[in-house]
Image (cartoon, rainbow, N blue to C red; front, side, top):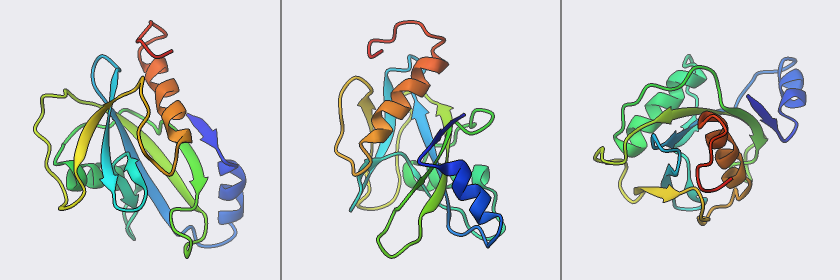
Length: 155
């Protein structure tokens, strides 16, 4: 698992206080590790499906729930988180610890989701409009590790 933005330090501090908010998302890739599934957020642009972990819910369960709600996709998540990062999702929220999980799904699976928040597949070797541009390289690097280091057209 990769760590970004001082996530371990955030976690150590959070152990002293309540751990809210907590976020979870899913990096869904196709079996060739050439595409990623993103949703169009009204403010953040194209981002992986995800959201807030609800009270009494684990982050893995939250990631699977958000994936289903935002894309209509039911997919088994790969074991263990792909990454952990701390970021500000909204100006009026405190910094949030976010766990990124991964899943593999065929691009032929029909997508549905929330109104005004379409889901679409994007090639990993091109950019997409997002307020989190660092996600592109993080997801590409993880896809490369999943692909076992074989050339996948973007590394």
